[in-house]
Every structure is written in C-alpha cells, then in structure tokens.
Amino acid sequence: MSRESFLLGNNLVLLAATFVVLMGTLFPLLGEAMDIKVSIRSPYFNAFFVPLTLLLILLLVPGMMSNWKRQAGKPLVRRLLWLAPAALIGGWLGARLPGATPWPGTLALILALFLVLAHLDDVVRRALAYNRGLFAGLRKLTRSYIGMVVAHCGLAVLVAGVTVVSFHEIERDVRMSPGDVAEVGGYRFEFESLSSPMGPNYQSQKAHFLVSRDGRPVTEMNPEKRTYRASGQVMTEAAIDGRLMRDLYVALGDPRGEDAWAVRIYHKPMVRWIWLGALIMALGGALALSDRRYRKPMGGVAGEQA
Image (cartoon, rainbow, N blue to C red; front, side, top):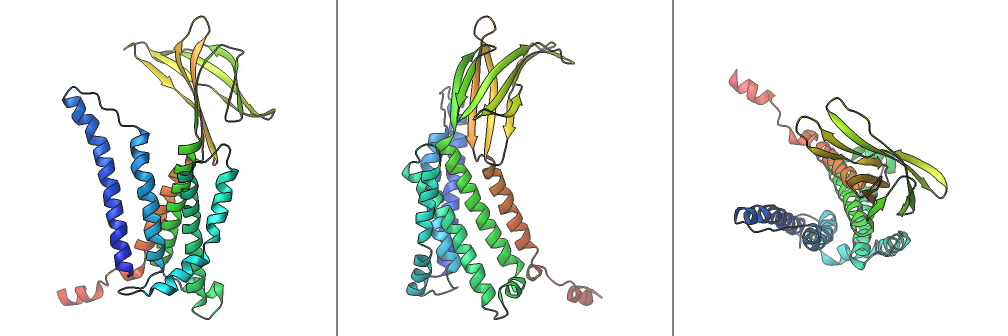
C-alpha cells in the first residue's frame, strides 16, 4: 500500500469514465449509420458515473494521505476514522434538502464533504509541522501542494452540484394562457402577458412571466418563440435566471389553442456548482504548474551553447 498504488487506481477509474463517455457518444452515431434509433440519456451516465465518482473519492483521500513507496495501514486508518463525523454531517445536510434524497445521493454528499475535510486536516498538519505557527507554516507550503488541494476541493464542489441537480431538479410541462399560474420548486410562475415584437429579421412571440416566492417578487422572465422570415425557421429562446444556489428556466413550446401555449419550466438547484467546481479544478491545475520546481533552469543550457 502506497501513494503510487492509489494513483494507479485513480487513473484506472478516470480511464473507465472516459470509456463510458466515448461509448455514450459513439453508440447513437453508429445506430444512426445503421438506421437504428439509439437514445442514450442521463440514466446511462448516472448508472456508471455515480459509482465511478464515489470510487474515485474513496481512492483519492487515502492516496493523498499516504507516503510514497510504502504506507503503514494503522496510522492511515486512524486518520480516516478521525474524519468519520463528516458522514453524520453530510447525511444531515442531505436530509435537509427539499425532497427525499436517495441513498446514492446522500453517500455522494458525505464523500464530497469527507474529501474537503480530509484536505483541510492535511493542510493544518503540514503547516504545523514547520513548528512556526499555523499561518507561518501555510506560507511554507509549495504551490504544487496547494494546487492539489484546490483541485481536489473543486472535485468535491462538482460532485455536490451533480448530485443535487440529478436528484432534486424539477421539470414541468404545462398548458398556460395569460393569467395562468404554475407552482414549480416552491416558485410561483405567473404568465402575465404575450406580445408579438418584430426583430431585425424575425417575428417573435414573447411571453412575460412574473416569478415570486413566498409572496416576494424574485425576477421577471421573457421566453420567446422566433420565426425567421428568410428561412421560415422557428427557434426557441429560453429565459434563464441563474443564481449560485439554483437556476430557473422557462421555454415556450407550441401553441395550444387561442392564446394558450405549451410551457416548459425547470428548477435546477446548484447546477452552477458543476461549472464552479470545474473552474476551481482548473485553478488548482494552474497553481500546481506554476511551481518553480517544474521549470528547468535555462542558464546552464545557454552556457553550454556559448
């Protein structure tokens, strides 16, 4: 048992995840070439990515704590058990979410929190090992190590975002006319009016929605259905209201009689955490690459050429 072994396991898991994406992308194309309709949707990816992601975190935490070449088992187990209360906190957070969270979602939140707490514990231990105090020790940490911690915490943010939006997003298709109201995810969507503005090269059907929650106004949303005059092509312009903890989407479908429209409404909690986690991971990679130890000195090469 060593850090190399855990890194090898992580690489195998990431390779398997890449293969899952490749197959999910190629199968519909192969089916289309053979006149066979193959539709691969989120259940396929969830069935593979959820266990692979959980396995990745399970290998990542002890790997980060392990020594190179050889790692004793008992000290590693003691450090992992010290972080066991993260399971209780993560389970409590999962139970506090609106709606029931299945056990895979709760487990994913527990492991995401476990990943963050494990890195905070390791950062404090390494900083205090310099015997100069916590803040002085933090300044001694290398950029490569800080980049690793930031990237792994970004993975935890991404996992939390994917978990919550996968198990708690709400989608509703409703028939609405001006004056109608729909309740989705605790938000009240009122179809106030419908207008027909003219664009530079299109004719539009534009709806105006008032969104409120608990009697307080939240935002106004204006989805459109555009018909381009030159080609006759019809395009849907969805209205999006994005916040850190949730996104709201409203899109107009097809007309359903006089002044009535098919309306699709989405409530996606924490969907922006997916992109935020990816950005944090990229930042961690940039910090690690900026470490001076990874840059070769050029003075000796220049001297030899002279």
